[in-house]
Amino acid sequence: MRMVDLIHKKRNGGELTAAEIQTIIDGYCRGDIPDYQMSAWAMAVYFQGMTPVETANLTLAIAESGDTVDLSQIPGVKADKHSTGGVGDKTTLILGPIVAAAGIPVAKMSGRGLGHTGGTIDKLESIAGFRTELTQEQFFRQVNEIGLAVIGQSGNLTPADKKLYALRDVTATVESIPLIASSVMSKKIAAGADAIVLDVKTGSGAFMKTVEQSEELAHAMVEIGTEVGRNTAAVISDMDQPLGFAVGNALEVAEAVATLQGKGPEDLTELCVELAAHMTVLAGKAADIYEAKKLVRELLASGAALAKFRQFVAAQGGDDAFVDDLRRLPQAEYVFAAKSPAEGYIGAIDAEELGIAAMMLGAGRATKDDTIDHAVGIVLNLKVGDRVAAGEALARVHAAAPESEPAVRQALERLLGAFTITPEPPKLRPLVLSVVTAAGTERTAAQ
Image 1 (cartoon, one colour):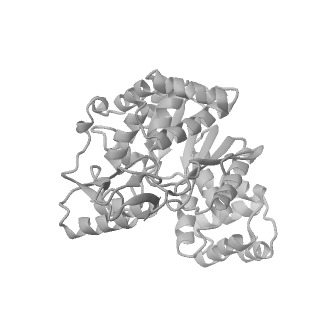
Image 2 (spheres, one colour; image 1 turned 60 degrees about the vertical axis):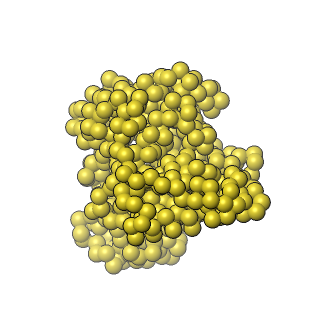
Image 3 (cartoon, one colour; image 1 turned 120 degrees about the vertical axis):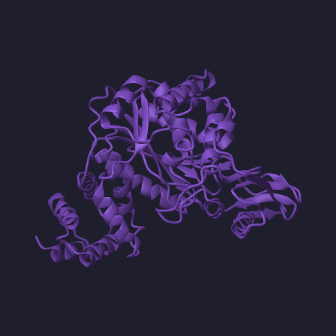
């Protein structure tokens, strides 16, 4: 089976068999298939697409290219969630405790961030003493004892995905829906979850800029999950502005705690209730989404979710006393206001630009070798639709250097440039735009 024949078949719109796809992935991982042929195949996929069965077979081949996690030692339906990224997205810190408090085991492997701000692991490392590396035995034991553990991804999880993504990044084939879907789902399947909820972001701060693109990706991922026997659903959520108010690692941890205390931002709370409810339904702990949302809200209101968060932090060596005294989190040396240049309404906030401003302050990584400053970031004072006066603070900047420093000044300029001030209030769109399941797509009535 020659690679040139498989490239030719896909270029002409043919459907590759499971064996042919396995040959491609195995050969590329071994080094038998050179980059130039894999690039040609990826471009053929970009233009011709893949059928749902092809995409599922590609996902399984990538998932099986390295280590896979067998969670059978943990009783019950194991639930997981994946977000396609965004600015201010700290939902894992809230969802894990809620779902575990509902009696659903959450055995989660998360990554570090590259870009805007840190990933879940970076955020958790803002907590003094928190260990993100556990042995497999410790990982399983903790989930069995308290229902929740979050660790860094294995170095050999889906190596085919790492190799293929690096190639796609330099061959203009990143935007292929089947390749994105198989990349995301291969990691979830290799990590062993039974029920998977996908938070697919759409808007200025997301990879997918339109609802239509996001729904297309969501359908592809739900089809993969269904094809390989995993209960899967996807929520399309707005990322035209940051989620919540905080952007930055320790700042986002503090906001997650406030949300678990019932005092969090309205949008962050709404999305977490939505995602947790879908995880609850897929795991069989609620008959429908309405019953699930009622249960989730009860777990937040009763303090059960917050208690689970404390237990989780302590179990992984973290200083859980910070929950009662947020000053125990890393604190920036300088905090100052970013002031509005005009009066009017917040017409738009470019989430990506705001994320880049946070990265420039040190909250994210421009390269994988960069060191994150857990204390720095941005806390918004206002969101889209809010009235603002000239000179009023749009946000508070948490920095490691004074405002006069060139790097901080450049970040501040970027931050201010992310805001659009309009004379009239803008039309607001819903936070949750649609939900995609194996049964189809349900759109928010307000659209």
